Amino acid sequence: MFNDLVNQDELYYEALKYYANILTPFNKQVTKKIAEILALNLPVAMIRPSHGIIWRQNPLQIVERYQQWAQNYQENQITIVYDTMWNGTRKMAEAIAAGIQEADSQVQVKLFNSARTDKNDILSEVFKAKGILVGSPTVNRGVLSSVGRFLEEIRGLSFKEKKAAAFGTYGWSGESMATITKGLSEAGFTIATDGLRLLWNPDAESLARCADFGKAFAISCQ
Ligand SMILES: Cc1cc2nc3c(=O)[nH]c(=O)nc-3n(C[C@H](O)[C@H](O)[C@H](O)COP(=O)(O)O)c2cc1C
Image 1: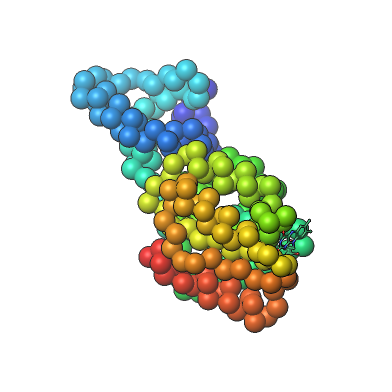
Image 2: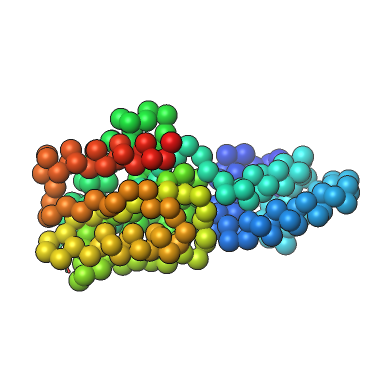
């Protein structure tokens, strides 16, 4: 029940998840309201929200975090979100991740399969990222449904000042890359590079192109 009685990493993981998934669209209002309340100069002994933990030890620590999170927060992280049927797009994602890491050994790279990971956890990792890469094979001239759902979720959250690009495999018509790029753009992301689209399951030469694509993206995020 109290902030001083729980594991601090877990507490802040959950607090960030709450902010990322619920409050991101209201960054401006959060900043304004905090300033308004701090200006009252009230002695704050405890913060007891209508839901969530009670902050009784150094209660203003969470207010300071909210101030940071409300400033279009980002860490030195690139998040890759993809789905796949036969692992072609997964192989692309992994080769892209390796390319990013080669270009920039400091940046944290995280990969998520959008059909297998809790969506709120993924959105927390998008919140923390300075750039995201989203991948799907083309399916019936569109994207896999978990990627379609993800694009809808990021559209609603209005993330700002983040770079993005699309990738994926295809068999004949290859619409997924354009669908993802459009979704990212409509969600307010800056499209950093043209996407990467590969025919069928990638071979060694195609995987080398993925690594180059990852390197170029990492550089565009610096
Ligand atoms: C049900 C189904 C629908 C597909 N529809 C399309 C399509 O409309 N256009 C296209 O270019 N490829 C289409 N494909 C081919 C896939 O995009 C291709 O097999 C791709 O390499 C699969 O990627 P993955 O290994 O990441 O699952 C379809 C494949 C399946 C199984």
